[in-house]
Amino acid sequence: MEVVKKINKSQACGMCCIKVKELGVSFGDERVLENINMHIHCGTMTAIIGKNGGGKSTLVRALLGEVKHTGNIEYRNTGDGNLRQLRIGYVPQKLNIDKTTPMSVYDLFASFCFKVPILIKTKKVTDKIKKALSVFEAEELIDKKIGNLSGGQLQRVLLSIAVYDNPKLLILDEPVSGVDNSGIQLFYDKMQYLRDNYDMAILIVSHDLDFVYKYADKVLLLDNTILADGGPKDVFSTKAFDDMFGGFKLDTDDLENANAKKRHISKPEEPFDASYKGGSHE
Image (tube, rainbow, N blue to C red; front, side):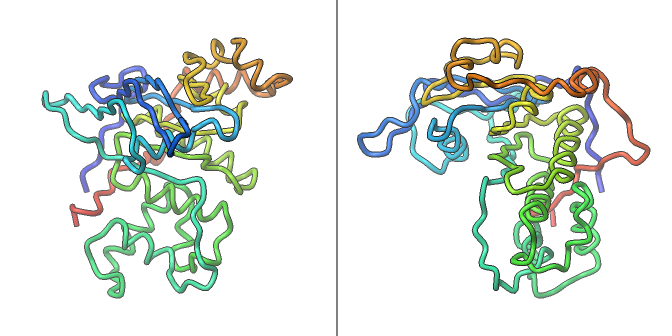
């Protein structure tokens, strides 16, 4: 298995980016998004914040091509001088699954990532799936029925699937909703590791303002249009932010430690491997 080269955040190649120009979305006569301009580089984490109904999830759906929009969205990878669509990993805010479904985690993973019949369970595929699930400490869930998973367990499985093929852009829509505190901390740690050690752009929709302030490189304040953008400190200092989240007080506990983590990339004894080549590679 080819190992993807880990890249220090400060040394991100800068050749992969997502550029959005004058994006707008309407549903009938209702204008949901307008004049959206954004530029996301590889090796960075961009957070979208805003009130409910402000268009955050609609923006994600537009980026994924699920809703019609005006304006332009470019996925640029200039490593070879050509413009082409980037590989995208995506974890939705909610996934409605029938509690009685007989599908297991193995079945779900195999159906998304491998060109093999899921009824034929092989050791090779099982080992690959276990390794992929271990990224989010979910390998013990491989034989569990999807309908029996807790919210946090399901999110860990979906995150493992999303990063399996080493996407250049990872989109996460409220990924820790329904996740317990230990799962949330695990998620934060993994997102920081992915951002800091791999040439991956992460776009996250989040209501967790403490997390956004501590870990995001760039913040977009959205309410049908972008009201403010820039570094967390700059956006959180704007009148637009105060008008929307008046009374918000940053949890300063461990803030210095979090800032130190931004500046320092830890190197675990066992290197994280995000180079799982599923799908067309199987």
